[in-house]
Length: 375
Image (cartoon, rainbow, N blue to C red; front, side, top):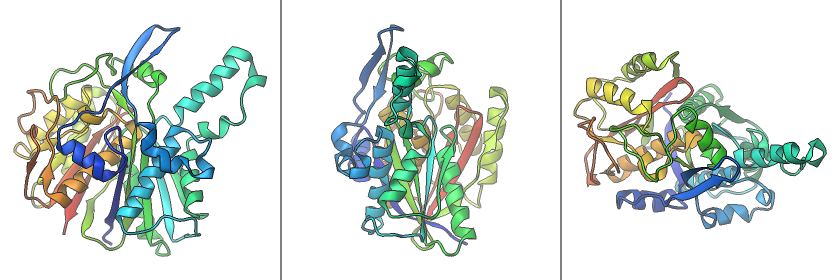
């Protein structure tokens, strides 16, 4: 059974919808960096936050009045995808639509606030208003309620590759459950000092305001954002390959797993473009090796220097950009591209193509890949 992407949605530091984000990406814009610090630890990091006015429409929903940033982002991207598909989001019961969310760190801002109160003032001071937003499935429950769905709603938790696993899960849902018409897959993430400091302890975060990909690995900058794709049984943009993901057990074996997964996705012809997950960590070296061996002449676009590493949302943002590239026949230029990958696309340009490969190498030892084909 063929499954298609019927709608694409996104909210990023560069724009409140897919259209504004895509236009800014094409102009070579870089998301503004915000410096955040912890007075106790004395360490500072940059992040790429989403401006509050980008999610103001979602914040007006009574249900989302006290919700965290991660839920606002997810709702905004989900509504954008439905709008792109020509559907009007409303609160009427629609149990022929399933919702699948992809998340990595979850509501880290509310979680930090909740436990800070416990540590600083004791367990009795913990706010019951904060706790519901600390659970992983809070964003999915909010969006399902806003759409009037009381049927199938899921949250997948993983690393930056979990978004592609969520799309595969959505494809499986539509294949197995014929009573469903569509599946809305959303990836969402928020940025916090605690997140950057944790990854810095593993030498995977930088304290500089930019980073290079496919070059000198310095650590990444974390960003906020969300993306969504609406899957259905008809359309012009097919999911020609999806996978639940493939684990690897050491950095040394990561390239082996990535090469195997890309091999599984191979068709009779090479893709016309690749959207990679490079973020100035070990990920870059893995993708350099695999792309140079398997597709040495296929142009590669890496969006993370422009918008930051959005973890649970990043894979779906890559899929969104791949879909928009096929739709508009335009390939963005990669900012701060190093010299290690000769096929990196450095300037925004038009191109002719019908198939895109999206790859994700996750921090938590999983790789994944997905292919889109324009019909």
